[in-house]
Length: 416
Length: 221
Image (tube, rainbow over all chains, first blue to last red):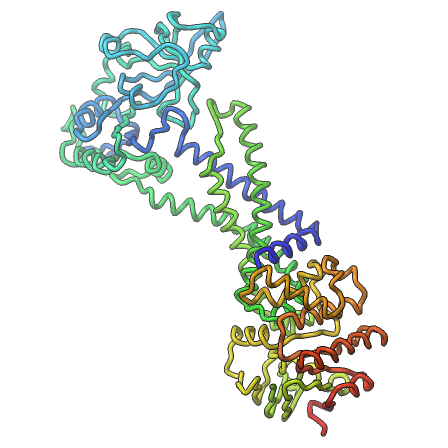
């Protein structure tokens, strides 16, 4: 039966080529946009670079501090002082790393200014994140403890600073500090926000130690556990620390700390919904995404519904014949929905090609540094899901409307 | 086989009530070949649609094989049509996008039959109407007479007990019309199929066992 449905659907598509073109155009554009967004989201949630193990990680990168009188509060990234006093001694994480935000720094080579992103880290950072070393190594604990002026750079920096030559042992100057290059790593996609930088140095190389007492600003922490099922307990431990044992150098002024150790998804949710709470509000964000995607699909669906009704109207005689020979309403609905899913699937295939082309262009253009767009089974799954939902949205109503036609009316070719 | 008991059909628009059929009582025996005659608009096709369970009477009851079907819902009616009734239409109503063989298989799609068995039965039906050589043609590649033969093959492929033909020769010349009539006669004679045929043609009507005449929605005896 399915073969018969598909055969009929194919013939119908070929019969009115202009209608088919308009339908396919709308479907392709809609699904292309959705696939591009999904791919971006997929690469963000499931990166292929150093953050590929993010299912074993919790991120601390937002903090709200309330004043004792409750009149003021401050929200930003945490400061190193806060992390040292409230995160370092958490019991459950297997590894903890503190690192600075990637800040822009400038250097001058032969009179040319080169901008780079500099990040200051500890040694655990390199154990937790899985960088691909092309040359050399990272700094060890002794180098870190003694504040050795050493740096790991990425491939792009090697190209810009050293014209692609082996940089190991050579010096690099950034923000007026001179570092000796000890390692080169593959470029990191800018979407991997905690790993991304051009130059990484020990945070013990800071010119000043003022950062060590700062409560707010400029730092993040990653909490690692090899067993992801332990992460909720770690989240609870962190929240308990904030609620019950919040440590600050200025308890007279700062009374309460609010924040969470978030998974990657929760982190996005917290940022997008601007949540200042112990919970991240991930459920609301997911709901919002689903609603947005549905709304985005609704308009072209309505358009396709109209086209489908016109298309099916032309086939009322066929509906009449099928009914006369025993087709039940449900069987006709399935037939028309299958037909619609076929055209949507073709549009989905085209959408996949178009989005692949667009993403390849984005990757090649360098707009997103380090972007390495990967189509994987998940993106295909999203595509399949979109096709299915879109096909159902735009196919069910016309199918229901037309399959309920009175057989005699249908045979006469009209709507009663 | 088929009994119509006090059948009436009324169409109601905003202000006008049109009586299409009234007080129709008709009993059709198994294996009978009858024709229904009458002027245009007298209610012949409405009567045929009610017999074929395509339309519901406003009043009265329809029984098939002794079972009254007035309580049947859409799903049940579809099953009876699929299993017991075959339709032949004046304008053939073939699906232009499907090949001859796929058109003939159509009623079997709604039965639990394997694709192989469907193909076998469809070929048998096409052989009966002398069109086995045209299985891969599309309707538009056939003459009117051939298209009607495909429509007959589609009507008989499910081996229905009752064949309803609404002016099956109406769109054909007399030669082709005669061919179609011969096929119907052989289906009646060889397979003992019950046939009800609406026609305007006296000559064709005379070739059936009984002629039922309709005038202004009523049977004339």
